[in-house]
Length: 437
Image (cartoon, rainbow, N blue to C red; front, side):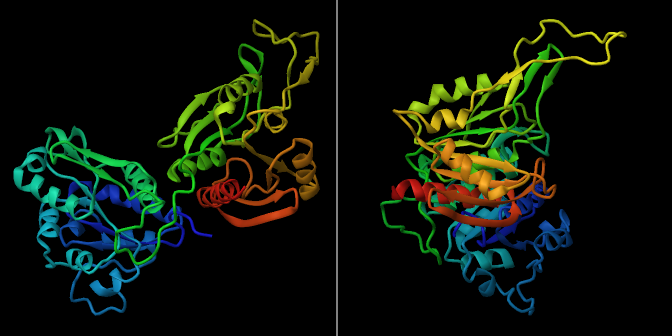
C-alpha cells in the first residue's frame, strides 16, 4: 500500500547556507516517515555539516564530488527513479545556477538530470533575497514548475531581521508530504514575484509534471474528520485526578497524516505534551464528558470520526471542591465512581448525521475476540486492535502494530513500525474504504 513517503526515493540537496545544520533534522523526519533519502552536498556545505552525519542518518554514501567513481552515485544514477528532489537550504548562488541550468557541481548536475518534482527552500541574507537578481531567478524557478518555499521572517545569522530564514524542518516536511500526496492547496503566495503557486494540479486533472512515478491522489480531499486523542482526566479534588498512561502519539499521528492527505481535521485532545499537528484544528478538553460535548459539537458535519482517545471508563460522582486531607485515624478512603459516557459508541449509534465511525481496542488479553465484541456492541464500521501490554508498542512508545477488523473479519494487519507510518497506512485504508462505500 502506498503512503506519502514510505519507500519514496528523495534526494536531499544541501548547500552552503548557515541553515545547513537544520537539514539533519529534516533528513531524520523524512527517514522516520519511511522515505529512502540520498544526500547530495555542495563542497561549501561540507564546511558547515560533516558528510558523516548524513551517511549515518541515511545509510547511503553522500554525493559531493561529480567525478566520484563510486557505484550508483553519479549524477545520472542518483537522479534515476527519484520521487522528489529537495534543496534545503538553497543559497542565492545555487538558486542562480538552477535558474541558469548550470551543472558545475554534483548537486546542480544531479538536479539537471532529474525528471521528478523539485522543491527549493531558500535561505540567505534579506538583502540578497530581495535583490532583483534573486527575485528574477526565483520567478524563473516558479514558472518552470519548481516549488519555492518562501523563507520565514526573523533574525538572521548576520544579525539582520527580515525575510530569509529557511522554513523550519517540520514545515518543510509538511510541504513535502503535501506535494507527494497531491494535496490541493497553495504552497505559497509570492507577492514579490506576482505569483501564486499551487502545489499540484487538482486530482481530477492529469498530472503535467514529468515525474518518474505516479503520485497517489489526495484521498482525504473534501472529507471532514474528527479524531479524539490522548487520555482524559477525572477530578477527585482540585489537585488530584484519575487518568491513564496514554501519550496521545497515535491519535496525533493520525491527525497529521489525515491533514497531509487533504482532509479537514479536527483533533479533540485530552491533556498531552504534544504539539498541534500542522494544518489541524485542535480542541483541548480534560474529562470524558467534556470530550463528548466537543465531539457532539462537530459530529453532525463530519464524514469520519476516529475514537483514538483513552477515555476513562469511570469518574468520581462528587469531586471535592477542596483538597481532601489525609487523616491520621483513617487508613483508607472511599470514592464512588460512576460510569462515563462511551463516546465512540454514542457516535456509532447515532440515528442521523452518523459519520463513518472507527474505534480503537487497546487490549491486554483475549485480543481479537474483545475487539470484535466492541465492534458489534458500539456499532462501529472499523475497529483497530493494539496490544497495550507489549511495552515496545504500547502506551508512550513511538512504534505500534495493529490489526483492523470490519464486520466481515480481519481487514488488515500492519506489522510493528513507527506510529507515523502506521498512521499513514490506517488513514489510507479508512479513506479508501469510505470512498468505496
